[in-house]
Length: 434
Image 1 (spheres, rainbow, N blue to C red):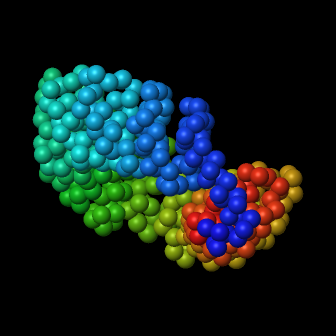
Image 2 (cartoon, one colour):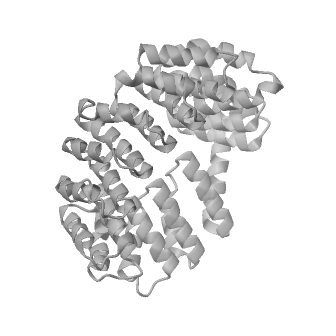
Image 3 (spheres, helix red, strand yellow):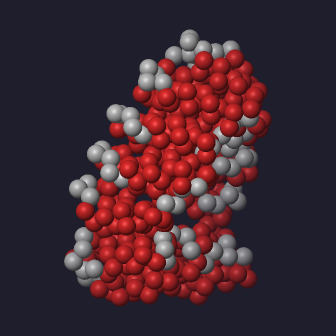
């Protein structure tokens, strides 16, 4: 690390590493959990083994469940063996730790945990059947799909368990479940939530043949179901081609319910319905609901193309337009047309440097740093010397995620001379990852 970061940077990085390991060795619960949040934000997996050792050694229920939740968030597998053992002895374990173990194993899609999840479902274990169903949906295969189907067909399962199993079938992505899900979706006697979950699951499986059943359900009088159907059609269209679902989604853009319109807007982008660009421009400009306008601007960025890019650029540079929408347009433009954003952004950033434009500038920075593309480094570099410490820290995290080696010189300067010790240490840590 010394050769990469330089002497000053290496010292800061070594100090940070020593501090973190000391917290894991001797820190109290709150210190350890705070450090885990920091590591998760930095996507730093170097300490996974040490954290797993702490998990095994600790007697604290709060710390153990917190560590399992952290591993679930980071998808680290170092705690898998420990968590499976927790399930195997769940009748004797602390409920909080068992629940955290189920959630973690589902998050990492642990096949090793499937036997215990199946046992909990087959024995109808009241305390753990819901968590076990989630785990089957996350990690299972065709056998688990059959077990979930049996739950759905069992009249004693109850509505909540039936709905959970319906969602788990979608998570499994087993095409063999499509017919059962289409039947649930079409049954007007079913609970509305069950039909909604059936639509969501059909979307997750994304079988092109589901377009007909979903399009039929789009005529439902339930706006929540229509919204779920539009979302599913977007996913089906992305897999099977936009043609079979385009008509239903274009009609969805005119849905009287704002939630359903938003779902349709997002769905045409997901399905790649490029013919919807003109309609999206209308929605972004004239829809009566602000949330629909927001969704339409983002959808234009997802679809991209010359017309969408030009429209977004015009909105971004228009000083008379709504500042929040201008910032959204910038974020969409950065995502779909980086060269255009690189060309137009400096002038807009410069014009928004006054105190009265602080909210607008903050929104622009947020949109910029949400997009991961090393080509955007020239726009991020000035933020490394920004007067706001939060902007400097966020720019460093962007550089870490994007491995933006072109910013090395600027980051070395931050590591050597930033006014904040925390920022200096973060900069040294980023340099060590290049």
